Length: 113
Image 1: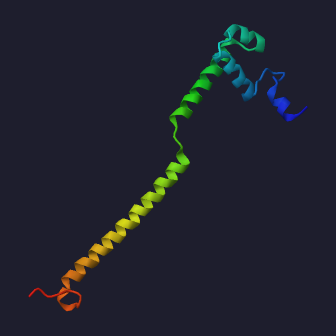
Image 2: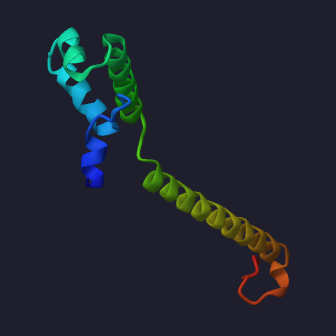
């Protein structure tokens, strides 16, 4: 038997694949009766209810999450750029301060007289 067929069917022990559980939950969400579906699938209504709650909790968590990869990479890149620009700014400010302090001996500074 092919792997996909094996995963899609119910095993002898009554275990369902994630795909089959999702299909059952979607049927519930579309309005099928819980009791009728549980009898058809051979599982208790409590099990189906648990699948539905887990499915909805996972959906809610996915809706709350943001796109972490691209946004986080961009934030890290921009923080590094800000740090580099701050260092350059501090170095230029220090250089300007030193040049102003030594101004009389430098030809680019005109005397005020």
